[in-house]
Length: 244
Ligand code: ADP
Ligand code: MG
Image 1 (cartoon, rainbow, N blue to C red):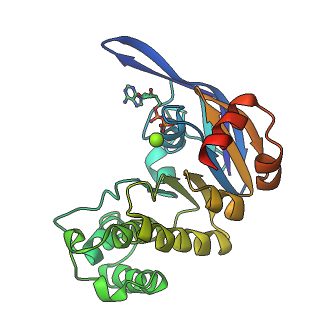
Image 2: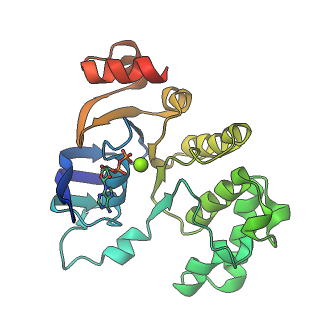
């Protein structure tokens, strides 16, 4: 579904150039749940943002469903709609109700009529236990509710893959579980997922594969059992000794 070929990303800043991704190669199959872990600043968010071209790669290629997203001739907007993204800080539109947040993109892009979009939104809201909050504004919701709405908003576009960037890192501890539960249900439903997280329990339970990123590279990747029981790279061993 996603193929990443020698992906490199350099940011040009006033203090000089920083090479944040130093050549990443990955194949992500349909239905996989790939969890990305690693220290802060290792390039996890940049990697995720390159997958849907929120960041433009400096070099290398991103292929999605057989098309080269990094090719200038490619209609990246159309393909990107098939990639849902959920951020640490929810990024809901504060001046719109929950219902308006969810239906905005499908209606504006003329993928669904307003009526069909609202019907679909209600079904999705029921799935995450928030159908009674459709007319609320984001400020009236808890962090856990906001993040569940952000997930629903992404799902309303019927994506083929969902990208999550530390979706529970901004939440109070008692709200982490309800968001992880929604993500687990999504995973069980067969969704292809790429998840950056520090939730090692989630990684162990849900991941089909875990990637360890450090210093702009994927230093190790393995199934969860191998990853936690037999980490090979000393940097991963050190990382695990700190987070477990
Ligand atoms: P992580 O998500 O693993 O914490 P990031 O991908 O956010 O790491 O960042 C990796 C490095 O890239 C950091 O050193 C960060 O400061 C730098 N970086 C990220 N985005 C930008 C940007 N837009 N401009 C300059 N530097 C950036
Ligand atoms: Mg990050």
